[in-house]
Image (cartoon, rainbow over all chains, first blue to last red; front, top):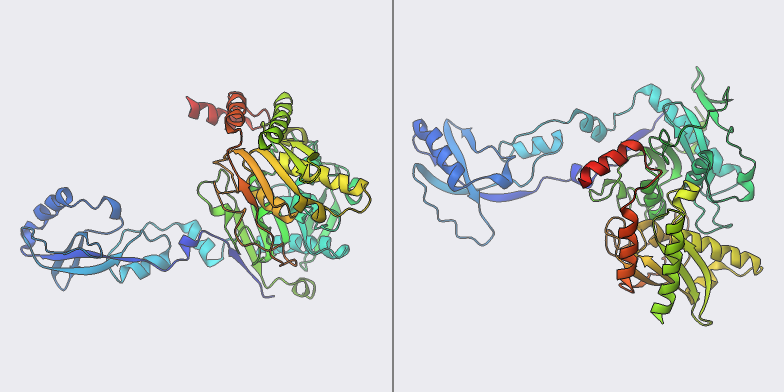
Length: 313
Length: 180
């Protein structure tokens, strides 16, 4: 079956590299190189450009970066021991991914520390085949939640550690304009923990032991089982809001729901359909990537996981 | 006039303090009748649901009112109303307010951590559609800030001297260390 996972990461990881102009020169006498570089480090520190290596060997010559040249700056420089001063384009920022690193190296030698986990995320290879099967099963159930009552969107909150479904929800804006699937799932989790605010008819029959365990059959179909013993109510410290839980939702959460997930400390979010009008974790904004927000979570978009695909295995 | 309604919102914030909630309160006022239609204060701890902010509570109350009035549509009522809230609505609430077609907001102090009306994001006037399937453009929020902000800030400062009783232990420790 086709279908792949895309990690929705900060735009910086996907950006083409940016360049800036530097003045550069040749070290006339290689024996003096160490001395010259030491002096340069004091007279022209590279503190804002630590990703750039100072010296580059090329055709048996030593080229050394001197300083950044601003757009309208006259770049007349005289530095003892350095000849043939010219300007050159070099990478402006530290390369974050291997792809950016390879691109950067074409211009100037850079320092790069590969983040193995990040590389997997960028390549969309962060899950084992077993995990993929499980994500697909849960997503199928989220889709069921929507189609059962012809709702535009459905969602599911899961405790991945115990492999248990904690909450289900579907968008019911006909009843209440803010009852999106995500908001309802969050409230169901609250109810499980002894709180909750919304008591609309469809949710009333669900009691705290309506938690189902999901397992994957040999042929890959999802099987729902009643969990043996009802999961005991965990202490507040162990389950604080939606900490460490996963959300599966057919549609990308809107800006309201995305921020609700920040407030609720969700662990990971999976969605199929992006929302170009109001999507809060990928399409319009990436709330989960904002550095100045107090909680961050991982977001994955599942490509080519249409209902048809999920059913016609 | 703004101060009159903001005082009512501040009363709701004080209700929140009594139940050990973050002190934020609001009222929704009918413009024509100049009458409070709904009140709300933070109910995050009471419901163990971190999305139960004052604005969301008030919207729910307004929804109830519409239902009990037999068929008044929320979206028809909200454009004729004004929200007075002691603290800048967060990003979630800002977009929620736009979804229910509220268009006028007065708030007290800014919310540097979550504010959706300029502090963290301009969710109040950026061009946004409804959620998937409802791509019609949502009306922007007209926002006025700073109404009786000193009192709102004072309430918050007083509250944050204490601690959130529902936060996990490790977070509280970290916070304490940070404050030292």
